[in-house]
Image 1 (cartoon, helix red, strand yellow):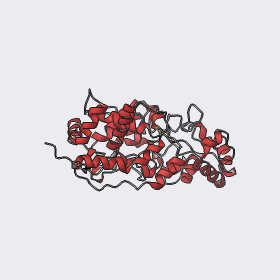
Image 2 (image 1 turned 135 degrees about the horizontal axis):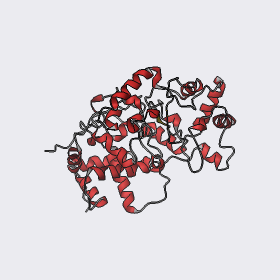
Image 3 (image 1 turned 90 degrees about the vertical axis):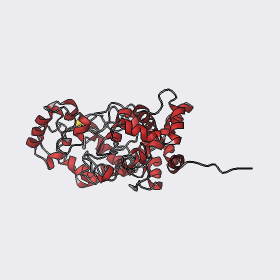
Image 4 (image 1 turned 90 degrees about the horizontal axis):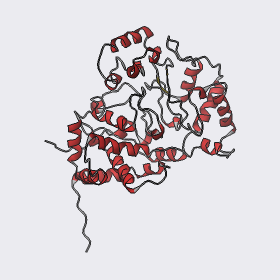
Length: 371
């Protein structure tokens, strides 16, 4: 005689999380992993989509890195608990396994470091401290069992939570775009217009100066940091320099300052405290870029065509403007052709996922009552 399995509320919620996002697995083209790594990825996936990791049960990692937006956000800047607006745009997590640094200012060296920061930041997921986060996760039966299997020695800690989330993020690999098929030898994978765009991208537009591509560097980014003058449109360089002088006399870490609207636009300078990095931000990947708008570190540009127009004028002049930022003299037609090429960088798998995914919501869920 068969009996219906009974689950506690917390266990059932974790099972629902695993059921709702199964298609995410299809993105991974990494070689088959050991079973314990697969278990870690599955645990990380549950944590990634779980709003109970936020202070008020409204925000998960997926709220800002939404599968429906190619693991980016459709909002100009990240939105945290209690509808708090952040200061920077949430970049895609696709292919983050190949990144050399994380966040727009590169303040995290590993995905594990990246995963920790939003959990404890008051403007993002808002957990008070590590102890509160660990207690919240430990209150869920299924998580206790899963961490016992995946991390038998360490158990549930801030490090193992971040480790599991990072394992899931590493599985988000985007390939299988028309451009990938083109460079593999299929000359019909791109339209004639896209081929023209590729030539402009490499030539007159000089996009490859920063958005480099090769077999060894497949993400269309040099992983560097550049001042393009984005915020110079709204903030004078003198004001930016004054804020830089203020930073030199404070002890706050880069993560805290990055979320402070008074200092966020200082960019890479917050990490290095070197004047050359004033207003410089990381070159983003261009893979799946048509799906990940709005654009720039502050989400201030809505469309790819407007991004091209911004670069065509040479950015906005300021004393620390990157030397590569010069007027390009592209015609409107040429810019549209480049945009058409950029659409060829969209993975077929990612496009299907985006089209089949419902956007994440901020509807609160019940959180465990931890004493």
